[in-house]
Image 1: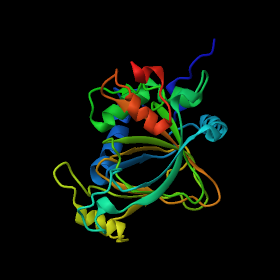
Image 2: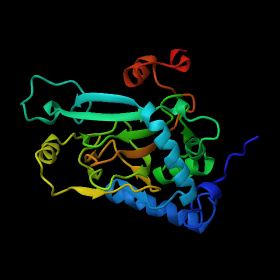
Image 3: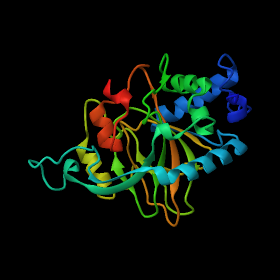
Image 4: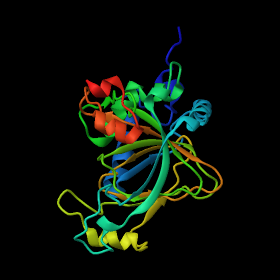
Length: 272
């Protein structure tokens, strides 16, 4: 019987003691992450994964990448349909091509280190504490629970806002050139879409722009719902990142319609 590796085996718990929630060192790590989220909507914890574990995760991702489900669409930053009553240069009418692949959660079988990282209870609790939730649960959707995002060379993740308030990701493979994560924090709120400022960014204004590289082993917590962001096109090789999904409702799964739109098919869990 295979034993699931613990937190100290998976993560650099000397630097990030996520298994010691009552310790001052844990609170210090949590406060660093909260500070980044409060200041610029983004926190990056470098070298979060142990090197040997990262190497195995990278090999697992490389083996699964050919099985990714690809999306090829022209999208505006809101993933919405065009509004014909608006000017041509309005953000709701600015569409750009986007091509990327996603490896489904059911591809990660028994013994998967990627699944072990996702299902680690200490990581889930740490993420909840950093984001200010009393409790989070690992997403039980069979396809959307944990995914590898595969970004081919030359394909940009164009400017967009996420549907979710937060996005949790880990770097697995960073291209030697390109593949830069660029973002503009707090550009919209629940009360104001701030289309004028969004338009400036789409027109190339760099004045509020921030950037980072999500290097292999880094953990990123990001307020993607309020932050306009993109990933520039990798050059010469694919970029891989790991997307971890945690939810407040332990019973939630995607609808059949959503699953079929995203993955091209649905699972029996989506049809109950």
